[in-house]
Image (cartoon, rainbow, N blue to C red; front, side, top):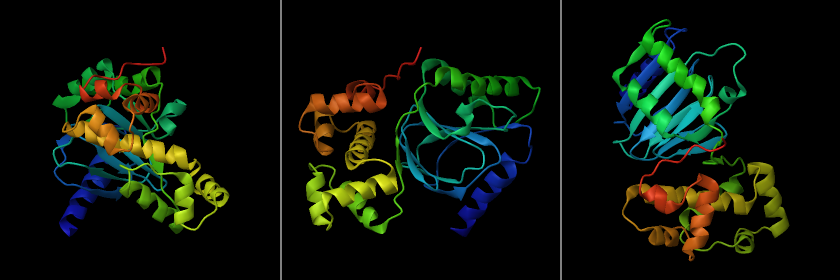
Amino acid sequence: MEQLTFKVDKYYLHKVDADKKSIYCHHNIMGELLVPTHKHNKAQMLYAEGDVVFVTTETKSYFLPARHFIWIPAGVEHSIEPKSEHVMMRNLYFPVEKNEDDFYKSEGIYPVNNLLLQMMMFTNQWNGDLKKGSPSFVIAKAIKAILPQICHTNLPLELPQPKDKRLGKILRHIENNLGETILFADVAHEFGFSERSLYRLFQKDLKMSFIQYYTIRRILKAIELLLERKLSVKEVALEVGYNSVPTFSNTFFKILGQRPSDYLNGEEILERGK
């Protein structure tokens, strides 16, 4: 474990930020199953292929599915944990510039359309520092520049980290029973709360309601199951507590922007917001 930590620290602290003006590029199969908490002086664009990647900051747990990228602003501490060691992660690290678009100042997960996918795949031939003035630097900078133009929908694929230990127990209960229908009133009674006091606790600690948290958690689990390609859409719906496939499909669409059947078939999310 000490050796793993050393490798990670050396990589992130010395290579990524060594040249303050370069764009750093790194593509690799994720052999280790955890990159411990760290931060960079450069902003990070992380694109995942093949499976789910969990990115955790101080305040939120992000769920990065295949064919999506997460933007992590400079200086944000985060850990990275791919679900599988076979996940391909494509990284571009960008120096912060003056008067940047507000897009670059916030964390977010976005679908990768065909244009961005082709641009990211083109970077596959690079690794290490892309020096200012070089053709590779110009192309990588164009990728960054295009993001605010084509990434209009920051997908709600994250859940806040609870601060209250009582709430932590409730969230673990939800996690362990996603295949069942979980009613708010039952949860409140089981954990010794009135419905009003538990509602207030969710709003105060997580800044969202029970039903919002529960819905997002079910859909995140559904994405995991779909990517495994072992179950049909109907079976996935049942696994996350939906007895009605249309209801499941509509909820999935509201959060992810496409039907679960399309996601199962690996279709790209189309660019929205034109």
